[in-house]
Structure formats: C-alpha cells, structure tokens
Image (cartoon, rainbow, N blue to C red):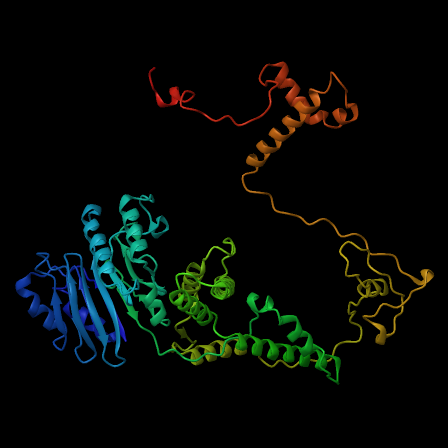
Length: 558
C-alpha cells in the first residue's frame, strides 16, 4: 500500500492536479508540503482535494502550515506523535495487514541554522522511542532541503557545507539510510542549470528487518519543482529457494573433510560425465545436511550466551574446580559460536578490508542488510509495459526475455567438407597431459607420448628415451603499479642511503670493492650530496621533541 510526500509548491491552483495524482498512484496516505494556503482556507481546500480523507495540519507551529497530512481512514489509522514547524511524526497502522510503524513527514527550512532544530527534534524523538536500545520501524520522507554528498549536486557550487555535515551527523545518530529507490536521482530543479537531490526516503535498521521488500519511487516533477516520493511496504515476503552455497564456517568444520570424502568415494557406475555429476550432487546433499545439522548460527550464539549467564548467576561466592572448569568450557563455546557467526556474516557481507576477531558481527550484519536494500529487485516491466512485483512473476519475465533473445530455434545446414577446423597438435596434447607433483616448486612429471586412456591420472613409469621435454617456465605475474609511488621511492632512498653509510664507514678498515661497484649507480647521488654538503655522515634516527625542544613551535618565552 502506497504513501507519499510531495512538495507541490502551492496547491491553490493545483487542486485538480493533486486529485489526479492521488487517484492515479493509488495513494492512501499523503503529505502535501509547502502548500501556500492560509489556515482559514485549509479545511476547504483539503476537502476539495479528497473529501473522503482525514486531514491534519501544523499551523499551530508555523503560520504557513507547510505540512498537510491526509489519509484514507478505511485503510490507515494515524496517531500524530510529534508536530513541529518542520516535521509531523505519526504512529501508523495499516488496517489491512495490521502492520505498525512510525512515519515522519519532513519539510526542512532553507536556513542551515533553522534546520538544526529539525535535526535535534528527530534525534530527541529517536531517543524517546527506544525499547531495550532498539527503535521501532521508522521511515522519514519529504523535502530535507539539503544534500548529503557533493555528487548529489549538478551545477553550481559542489562543496561540502556545514548544513551537509549537520545532516550527516543527524542520520548517523538516528541510524537512518536511504531506502532502495527507483526513478529520478536529482529531485529538485531550479528551472535553470542547477539540479539537486533534496527529497529522500530514509529508514532505520528495524524498518529493513520488518519490511524487506519495501522500496521508494521518485516520480516526475509534474507542475512542481520537486519530485514526489512514493513509498510502499512491499508485497508479502515469499518463501524463496536459495541457491546452494558453501560458507567458510562449514569448510572449517571438523567433520567437513570426512563428509566430503565419504560422499565422493561412494560407488557410481556409468558414463564418466554421469559419474562426475552424480558424485557432485551427493557431495552437495551431504554438505546441505551438515549445514542443517549445525543449526542457526545466531540461535547457537544466543544459547551459548544464555548457558554462560545461567552458570554465572548461580555460581557461589567460593566456586570449586568444577564450576571454574565449566565456566571455561562455556566461555570457549561462546567464543567459537561468535567466531562462526562473524565468519558467516563477513562472507555474506563481502567486506574484505576488515579482519575477523574484533567482534564485528553487528557491522557485518548491517552490511548484509545494506547490500540487500541496495541490490534487491522489487518490480520489473516487460516489453508490453506490464509491471510485475512478485518474485515468481519477476523471474518469469526475466527468463522469457532471455529465451526470446537467445533461445530462438535456427535451422542450420551441414558443415562443408572443405572447412578447416582448428585442433590441438600432438605436442600440445602431450603438454596438457603432463602430471604435476603435489610438492610446490617441483618440476612437472613427464609422461610418454602415447598413453592409454585407462592410465590417465596415474603415475606410470616412463623410460627416459620416451620422455618429452619439460614445459617452459611460466612468466612472472604482472602486478599493477602501487598508489602514490613517490612514498615508496622515498623509503627506498632512505634505505639505500643507510646502506651506503654502512659501506662508506668501512673504508678505513676494509673496502668491499665488489659491492661498491655493484651499488655505484645508486651511491653516486649520495656521494654528490656529501661533497656538496647537502647530506651529512650521520645515522638516520627518530628524535623525540621534549618541552624544551619545541619552545619555538609553541612560541614560549623563557
């Protein structure tokens, strides 16, 4: 079910336009922003737009009543919680699904100083609704009158302002991110050359947990200079069969090798390709059973934590050895469960720059949730213009599209006899059949020129006169250049200069002539610097600045 926030920039002369917009987009809950209607005419104009809607205004807090909230009472139950000059926050209940969540309809003022009051009000509301440190599902949508990043500005000055910094700090404090959206990226146009993203739909982590199929759409501006943002909680989640995946915590399981070996060594008879595919399927089934036998990782963490807390609560003031050993065992069990969960979440989140072992489970979980919010496909339009929303329908449209594109039947004629088809030569064929030893760095083992098909994969004894020459050594891998190469060059020069000093100081005892000649090209610059008194024959070391040494820097007078 759809709900919307739309900065209409004056609604007096756009009543019919607003009526059509609500009807065409099936809007049951809407916030009209910057209406430019006096309080005395607000009831008449709002009822002219939708007489069957209930309407709520913020005129007591702003003389222009920037925010109007209207809803269909047959579909929604609305309870205003906070009314402010720049936002109206309500408790919302979807009567058809009995879903409860919080909605903030926002119209931020133009001044960065005035917007500070909005950020403070949102943070204060967030703190007031926390239950055991968790905020209920919450969405904030509307015109925030400030960009979040410089890439959200086209034309004009693209610099980070204090208002952008305040906005980012507010979102970090209330843990809100952009809801997955489609449509217009830059939502405001000044009718000139400047476009910006001022309108948003922001949600908190609890919203992403409860409404995983929710999304937002930024529709065309119409008669306004702002794009309307239409959000929906999404369709009812479907049970989707996930593709088979082997995660790292399963590979590290103590019984992993035994399970794989047992499934692979089972007897299968038939065509080689059938034998291979059948064994792979058996390994897959065995790994699925192993994964299910280990259970839910998060539940395992909760159980291990509950067992440890239960023991610690019942531990006497003078515990005996049994208590101490049992606590150590439960602590070890909890650490193992946490490590498995962290390994699993890191692999799912695909975050590769952060190491394991630092208790990053919450971060990895939020990264997984963020990837889902960004990458999900909530709707798909076919070639006829029909829009599909369910997982089954979307997958069907995708399959049909590629079947029509790639799966067409084409009549082919026989291949001409004079066509030259490339094939492997005998030397290449023998090279591909060379056996490699398991030891790293060993030369490849040679096999005879003609090997029976039933001996491939074994290690037959080969006479020297029938052996083929070893393969040519592989070329060294090519690595990309490092970033900021001058930084590494400076370190290399310091290292060379230190080695030069070491060799140079040995001249009065022993002259390593061969080494001096070898390093002469790199030492030439150091010798030139010493002769020109630009370098000194001193050891390279780091000197700590004390209170007396930094007197000039601190501008102190003695």
